[in-house]
Length: 93
Image (cartoon, rainbow, N blue to C red; front, side, top):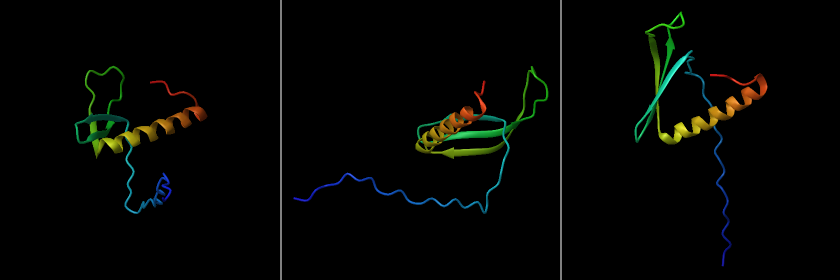
């Protein structure tokens, strides 16, 4: 009888290709979800004064992903912010 091993398959090497990368600054975001996808709206808040009754946000990007990708993103963001706060102090929002 052969012994079965419960080995996890090796993860492939990920090579990040930044040849077509662009950078976008955002200071406003919204997230909405349905059963099959999660959508992040990323934009820039054009408000110059506190207490305005109306604030315009120019949406620059819409990022659509599966719920599984969104969950992995949430975990990576949480870990990144935890390391950031350990180094620079707590972020109060």
